[in-house]
Image (tube, rainbow, N blue to C red):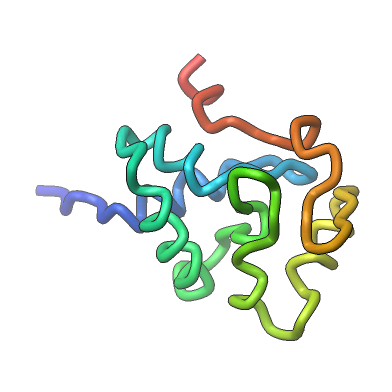
Length: 110
């Protein structure tokens, strides 16, 4: 019998599907997982993403495109540099043209 995946594991599965050059939000992942009130739990999962391996946590931002999780990366600007290397402009810790770069996990259901 297969062990049921934890909420964190489900979050990481979604995050691994965020395309390069795109970002999504904690809330969008929570909605996709059927738990729209769990955006904060998605954030906690992202705080631990480095232990899961292969999770592009730098592509998960808050609902207005702020790099709210940047303190979970080594150095002061690592998250920003990672996003900029994928062609996303960041000004004052915020994704510019957020709507253009936003990836909605609900698209996976289409």
